Length: 602
Image (cartoon, rainbow, N blue to C red; front, side, top):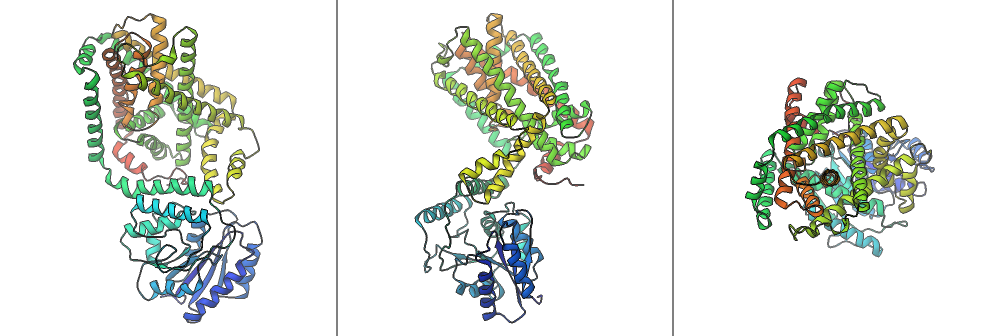
């Protein structure tokens, strides 16, 4: 035990009106049940813009039991708490809100739960029988809803996760904070959830509580912030640990089997196989060569993007890195290969992870924009040519495809419209000195969580603005992206020719452009490794809807087209792993633990 048995941290953000009274009450209450000199009070002042820093410094100078930790920048509630706890001296670590909403007569019970009773974590609860809690209606609804969602998704068994009245055993807390990712309002909940998952002893007891000030439900903090954090933690502690390679392979196999079983309801698989056997193997080989031409372009585009971020690398190495990452996306779900590329450029060329992830974000935006331009231009051309594009799905070959075909096009149109709108806004604001992200979020929320959310949005927008600020770079990367996807479409057209579908050249080109573009937009949602199934479905629906080609031939062509591209990707990926001496599984495991915003590591 240290001389200071108990350290109480008061998280303070613009608390000039309450801080002095809070410190006074805290010292007095602690002195009523703890020996003199056995406790300290730390003011964790978090980037305040009022008189809080001056008041905290004055209080610390006047009483050696009080310490003040100042931060020029917002660390967030959780970040400020962790920083103060690390500098504290006590074995029992306590914090509560500076508005003293929780009745201070409970402080002794909170401290002694750790100090005497041996619990690892103790927390007050406003939702247990025996407490008195006065809440405005909107706050009552929000709190009940939030805690219900936490119990539903995270299975904690606790009644109240966000009550700002908690204590920890020092060793237990520091063991937990290594895994805690949130540094703001969700920090309280995440610590409790991880503590329960780790098997620590938790004491939850009822407290009398009365809110102070004009607290209100906040859209950004309560809906966007807290809701997304619940889902993130649910995935990390409830789903991800159960997903290993065996589960992934089994789930992927099951999805394929289900898709095949459902396909037999409206399509004879033997007809698809017969159509594939009839395809001209020479033209399929030509399609393979055509697709190979796009890969040096992918390496050149990635070189240009990295050059804008300040890194110059050889096209050969970068093409290999793209091959490996795309192979990872085929083998592993949820586009795990994207993180693999950031790992490779860091491990082999010492390009920091933030720059690696930034380059990927830029590349993805240009891919979406290119596909949208191709799909939109083709859609307009077909309409001008007199094709009834509004009747998609009404092909004679299968009435069952009508609604699905329309849905595929509408979804692709929505994704494309969103991509164009986002890029237009980013480009338009690239040279602006105004912080439009924070200004817009500030209109719908006045909570400090806006800083966190705005930071996430700004990092993404800033990645694209890096290229958008340079008109030449934007044009070069945009042109190379269009050319890459034109070659992708050309590959599909050659495959179509291998099936002798009997379409006029103009009709074949137009439908091919639309089908490939929509098929790739459908792969935006990473529901299966490499988008297998999604691409073929969307591709076939467009072809059947707009041409006399039947379902069997359309699906066969889609399967062969996607297979050609995937085989080239896998062969190139395997060759690149050997040339660069990279283990794909090791890269996936290493990159899964990488924080995109973390600094570079040696």
